[in-house]
Amino acid sequence: MEIKSKIFDGRVECDNYLVEMSNSEYLEFAIAALENNEYQRRRVSGSKSVYALLKEDLKTGCVLPALVLALPVEMDGDLANTMSKHKGKILILDGLQRTNTMIDLKNELERSEEDQGVLQEFLSRRIRCEIYVNLNRVGVLYRMLTLNTGQTPMSIRQQLEMLYLDYAKTNKTGLILVSEKADRPIENIDEYNFREVIEAFNSYLERDELPFDRVDILENIKSLNNLSKETKTQDVFDELLLTTHGFILKVSHLIGDEGLSEDYVSRNGVPWGNSATEVFKRGQCLTGFGAALGRLKDVGAINSFADVREMINGMKIESSPSEFLELFNDKMLDLKNRSKKIGNSQRLFFAYYFRELLNREADNFQSLDMAIEVAYRKFESQTF
Image 1 (tube, one colour):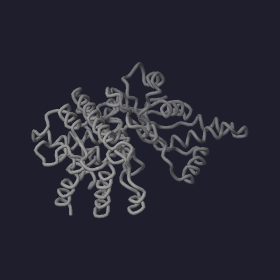
Image 2: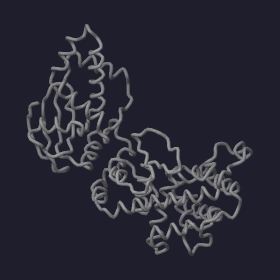
Image 3: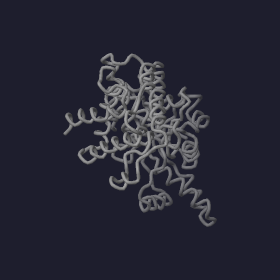
Image 4: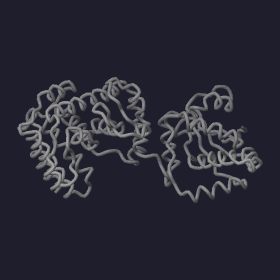
């Protein structure tokens, strides 16, 4: 490895090194990054013909644009030694697809006895890299967003999960938060989609049921970093998650094993939800719940999460469970048919619903079914 220059990046407050190294040395670091690092993005599918062309170019010695890496640790000796000692922590900020193509080419050449000469030439060629040293997680995310603008970016879900990763690690609720990297469905009542829980948390903090988009995250990234450093917000995160789960458990207990009739499904098509978890354990509901709690707290209608959990314990369904499910599905179907932005409309409806359900001054306080009609009328008055 040969260092060509070092420049301090004032935006993310760390040193940026421009280096040259062999493809062999780079791939040693890159493979470790892809295998070991929890922040690293998954491989994105793309045009096979484009990557096949790049492989052929690499065989003939094409020069790639500089790849951008991050090493989120302090210098431990010189740069080469630091990277060797901590190669499992290296991140590829820009050039993930090029790197995967290089790895594919290396593997293909290694399997071919007649291409061993081509392999050695490929591995010995030089590549340029920019390396950010001691870049913190928010800096990593910021650079990933800015470097990949116009290309295949990290998903919003990945961005949020990276910001709030510590919250999942220190989660004291006993509930399971399933990240995008796990790449599996939510199967049990004690499991939650991590991204949806994060969005509910943001909705509580911002008193707004609408989710973050890519621009919001980029513009608010420093304030989110400061927020994540406050220990009290971890307590809020856990308390909100426990309260949400308490609501899901309560409604599940009230509904039991009952569901929609076959006749209802045949008349109305695929329902919004056929059980408590299908109705309420969705991102739209969770963000509406978080936003509603924040607003009710602002006006003094609730005092604490413990106060909300006490309210939840007293909730009831005045109709039968099947009638409740049908009423809820009727409203969600009507909302779907009348809304232009269905997801945002659903979030707004749930925010009205929980504000009615958890407000002691409301006529339908704690009534899971009676609150539906009132919430929907308020929603209609604001949107249609």
